[in-house]
Amino acid sequence: MKLECVKLNLKDALLTAERFTAKQATLPVLRYVLLIANDTSLRLRATNLDLGIEIELPARVEREGVLAIPADTLGSFLNNLPQERNVTLEQVGEHLTITGENYSTLIKGYGYEDFPTLPFLEKGTQITLPAKTLINAFKSTVYAAAVTDVKPEFASVLMTIEHNTLYLVATDSSRLAEKKVPLKTVPEDEIRVLIPSKNVTEISRALEGLDDQVHIYFSKTQLTFVSGRLRLTTRLIDGIFPDYHQIIPRQFTSEATLLKQDLIDRLKITTVFSGKLHQVRLKIMPGEGVFEVEARNDEVGETSQQIEAVLSGDAVEYLLNTRYLNDVLTVISSDSVVFKCAGPGRPIVIEGVSDGSFRYLLMPMRG
Image (cartoon, rainbow, N blue to C red):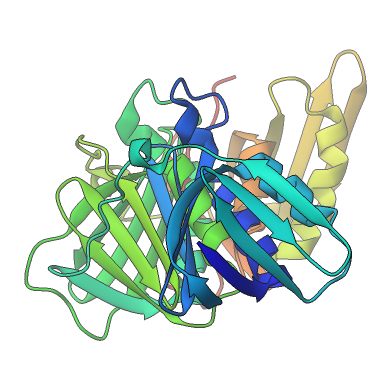
């Protein structure tokens, strides 16, 4: 292998690929990035066996080759490299030399024969949508997934298609986020897959900043995302996502519409008094024209904050997790939000005003 490429392109690609390596893996090769030079490009591959990535860079290839290099070592070197436009990479046995105008460096490599094969899908059932749309859909839902994988189906994001619409849903049983994306073309095969939520986060980061379309290829055990010179593959969870439609209220007894920023500002104050359980009490009293959030802590004190809102229906009171409220407010794009209440003890539905593509279901806390 011998090639020349733009240093900044290599540095950015390696920064992305390094997140897909396994830092604590028992297999040493999983801490490496695979460099593949052929024709007019350099491809970087990395995997932790759960998630894999391939990034293709334009390069002036003088001699083809394949080499596995420790991702952290190469990344640290490039981060501290002087401001040069191009770098020259050359394979020397199982090692890599990097040369520029005023330096020469050798990084010890690893036999590429042990590097796992990445099974990218390139045909079959697929859908296509803009990268920004997919990223937004992932970010609108993934935070609602469980942080532990005791029940894998709760530590995942459901991706399914119904009536020309792509649905992404996540829940940890205390809350649920659902995002709808209309599709121009729909595959004939049924799609209902569970993506590990930790993989969704990394896929979103890898796609960040892309303006291209993303082609998503489906199988029963994996997904492949292809966009321009980037390819990603993730395993799927073999489980059954709960039938969440049964818990979404169909009728509401109270409703409140208010400015999102007003609620964010008041929650910042109540958080000081919400305690270890992050509890905030929400009071909706249409008869008195009051929308109020309050928090109380025996060791710190208490606060009560009223917010101007348009109210209707019956008076209702809930004990809610303030972190769960803040999470949804960061992903709602509308300036105003609406709280739809089905009565005491029942779930609250939170939506952005004039945005029918997203809804958030929040269960009240006991107390």
